[in-house]
Image (cartoon, rainbow, N blue to C red; front, side, top):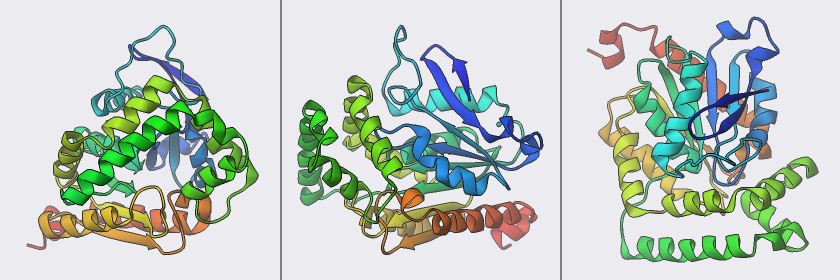
Length: 301
């Protein structure tokens, strides 16, 4: 449990190697959070993976224990990418080929930029519930209404501290039952996150130009990519992740795989931690074996 001071903030992070002397030599997994949530929701998954992986979680500016008072961080994809990049370099994760990056929801966009920036260190990418969509009139209308929903949610977010709105909020995020501890985490993080940051992140996550850039850049990731989706997701339509997977298969020469969880929602890492961890471990192991092949074997030539 440490802080990294930068021009943006005092960034709170946890590195499992702090508690495991041998952990520094293990393959590394960096987890990038979704909208309006601290890094706490990764902890059950970290508990499962840390026996074999050095796991790093952190609170993005505007969430959790990260301190932004007295700083002037920009709440953009570039700003959040720079923030995570400083952590990567502070921990020396850019100096060897053993970095797995996992991004959830909005964090998938930040993870994609990190994957391109640190392609020499990257072994694999995992993108959870952060898809791409064809630009249609219906999609545009959906984004318009989603923008309005963000405004309403932010202006009246304290109502989610009380029933029945509390339970409705959690059920929209997690289709399967999760523990009361993480019910409380989700509500506390959302209602106590920095309002300016949370509103800005919500808006840029549905901005057309940001989405177009994400669509282009996710195809440029040269390491193996795993697309994960809960098919019962009520927060972000799961079809977008399926489209991402199919588009990568069609347009990228790099390995792409898909993990579909038919009964899970937007938070598979909490809804079925063991099953989700198994999919990640299979992906990590595949990617590590992929890089043990010669360049000719990787391309099939």
